[in-house]
Length: 137
Image (cartoon, rainbow, N blue to C red; front, side, top):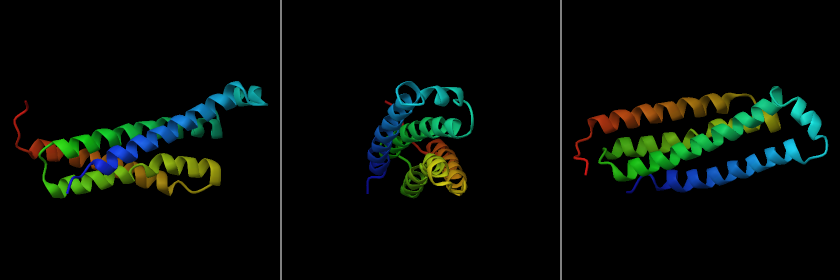
């Protein structure tokens, strides 16, 4: 089985969604009725969390594209490839969790779970690459 395709496709779609969300933030800051209040509260509370979700959504999307490509192309063992792929994909729960906190008032459990999973995925991929045997072109 080819691992990494889900990360690449999911990461690109996630990137598109969080880019669109960024355009919403621009609208709220520059064009929406009451934009002055939005600008005044820009670094506080919900405004800060909104930007945090945007930034982490794009970062985690790009990380998934990168992880997907590396898992697909590097000669790492299939067990590591499968786990790294799924852990990185599940790591996208972090920015979703930030948005859930912001919009739904959800507890930060998904933020913490997603953050832990993406860190484990990165560390596991680093170790898998270190252990792999390949000759760079």
